[in-house]
Image (cartoon, rainbow, N blue to C red; front, side, top):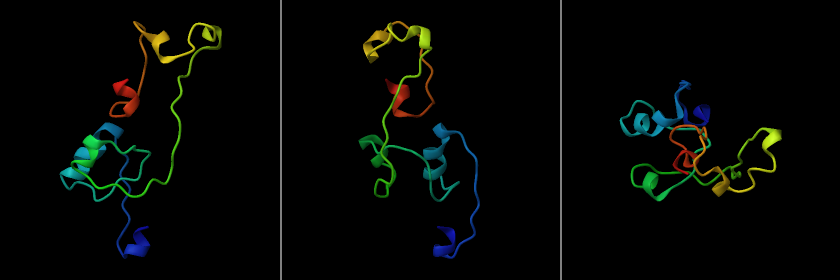
Length: 90
C-alpha cells in the first residue's frame, strides 16, 4: 500500500475507539481496520469500497446455550464489547 503510494509505512498500534479521532486530527493518514461504514462516520471521513463483510456473534458459555438464543435474551445482563464498535451501541 505505502510502496504503491511512494511513502514510508509507519504502523501505529492504537485503541479502536481512538482511530477516528486520530484520523480527523491528522495524527494518522489512514485507518486499516475492520470498521463498518455508518452515516455518522461518513460525516467526517471518507471510506474505501468495502473489502470485508462479516457477521456479529455473541460468545457465550456452552452451559448457557439454551438461555441465550437472541439479543433480547441479554436484557438486564452484563455484556462485554469493544469500545467504539457498532456492537458497543447495542
